[in-house]
Image 1 (cartoon, rainbow, N blue to C red):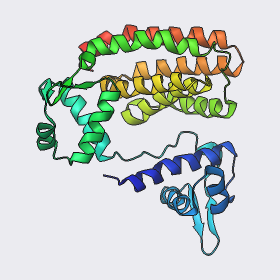
Image 2: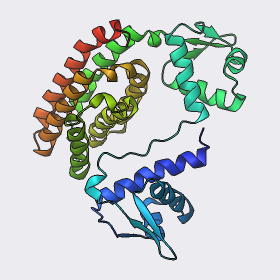
Image 3: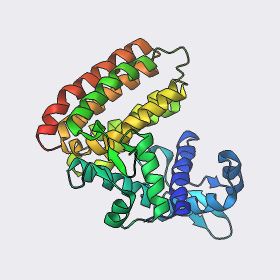
Image 4: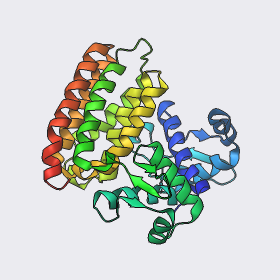
Length: 299
C-alpha cells in the first residue's frame, strides 16, 4: 500500500505525462527538472521522483550526468496512464461500501466495531467516515455509531444517479462559460479510438476502462468553468466506481459507449455544443436503459 508521499509521486508522474503529450515532445527531448518544477509549482525533489517512475516504465530515460530525456514519442503515450496505488483510506472506503452492498456488515456500526473488523487505525477511520458522510453514504447516529444511508441500495441508487446526471451533464455544454481544451479533447479521442479498435477488449482491465469513462465525463464537466458541476460529476463517478464496476466486463457495451463518447467529442471539437448536449443526453439514456439488466446479471 502506498504512502501519501509515494502516492503523490504517481499523481505527479501523470501530470508530467500530460506535459509531454501537450508539448508534443519527441524522443531525446531533455526534461529539465527545474523547468518542470516551475511549470507545475512544486520543488525539484518530487519532480525527480515522478521522473524516476516514468523511467521505470520506459517512458523516459536517464543519461549519466545529464538528467532525464523523453524516450517514447508523444503520440504513442495517448493511452498510457500511471495507475495510482490506493491509500489505506481509499481501501477502507471501498471495503466498507462493497461489504454493505453485499450485506456483509450491518446497517449501523460503531467506530470500534469498524476498527476491529478492518484493522484500521483511528485517524484513517475518522478520515474515511468523514468522506463517506460527505458523499452522502453514511450519517452519524444521535447517540454513537454510524448508519449507512439508502444511497447504498445498488439498483435504486444506480437509477437515481443516471436520472441526476441526465439533468446535469447535458446542461453543462449549454453554459455560456463552456470552454473546451482542444488538446485534451484530441488526447481523449485517441484513447477512445484505441479501445474501439482493440482486437480483444476483454483483455483490457476494468480499472482502465472505468478510468477512461470517468475521465471523459469529468473532462466535459471541467470545460463548463463551474466548480459545482465538476464536484457533482466527481461524486457520481465515486458512486459509479462502486455500483457499476462489474459492468465493464460487457465488451459490446464498452465499445458502444466509446463510440458515443467519440461522437460527443467530435461535436465539441466542431463547436456544436447544442449537438454535444443532445448526444450526451442520448448516451446517458442508453446507459440508464442498460443498467437494470446489468444489475440482474450480477453487476
